[in-house]
Length: 144
Image (cartoon, rainbow, N blue to C red; front, side, top):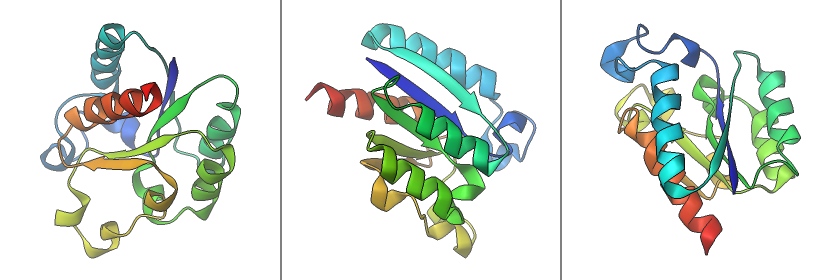
């Protein structure tokens, strides 16, 4: 089983960007944690990060035939990108939406996701642990 972890804009700044919301772990720290978790689950991971909406769409489309599912933190594009929503819907790969912060405890505009309706689940508010929970949930769903 292969899972693609897709990260959107500004997540390359984790560790220094607003640590009260996003924690002090870097994206590399999260990738290392997920790699270790994947080994215990017996799955392979791929990682992709971009600040550019179209590149995220391309990564989601190119996952077809290479990956069994996607863990997606579209970051700010969660609330604005019909293109990313349409890509997730089009590829029909089980996708879990993930957020480090509790988006429902933040600004009003973060309370609405364009992605949730086309994802099999959503995890938010647990910091880096949100990714581990999303990965475990996706693997469990794919193993059914």
